[in-house]
Length: 98
Length: 98
Image (spheres, one colour):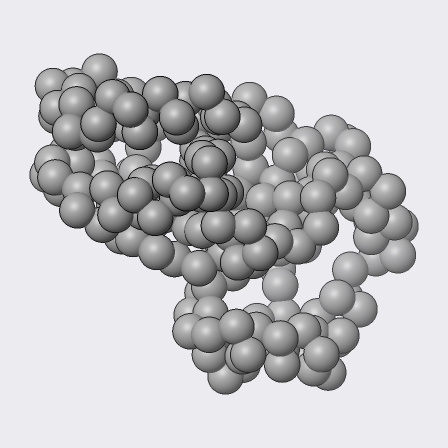
């Protein structure tokens, strides 16, 4: 899970970038799915959640060319805007109940 | 999404309570699913995520007897332990990309 904060006037662009994503991760070993959430009361707060079958698959993807290429598609301007306002880095969780 | 923090020695009990949940919510209108996540590096941090088809269904459930009964099953002792250490109240998000 990553929590991102962008300037309100960039939120639409960031959501658009996720909607138009390259889908390279969809073919990664162990990938289950991802969702991007936008706070109902604060459009500048977004959370990206990806589900994996196991931690090792996730770590392998994070080091992969597919990950590098996916991130390379985001404009440098938008990327720096997200980075500067990032609230939290990546956190990993185990699904313990459903 | 609710983020909960409990004393480390209560985390196992809290996870157990979620695993043994009454499943009353499963029959609520608009309910899609729920997951409980436990931080890989800090077992005392848990996140509960529930998915709904629409905000109104979620709000109706939160006011329902089913919700009240589900929460009534948690021991008062554990509940107060969670409550005291709650980091964040409920936040709602819209899934904007997948």
